[in-house]
Length: 84
Image (cartoon, rainbow, N blue to C red):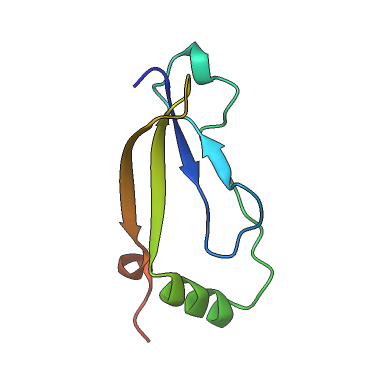
């Protein structure tokens, strides 16, 4: 996985999303961060509703040399939400 990068894009996010690297990736992808932060500009209730509507976040694992897809990871966001 030394040459892999991860593409992440939230529902409704403009542009191509964000690229990340695994914390154990090689120097080939060092230009990509290992974490990303988003500023949430709405109430907690609205944000929870957004995550419920989105339900899943897909991470696309790509070969950084040619952008060939290596795999996909799906995160079920509903597991992280508190039940009301």
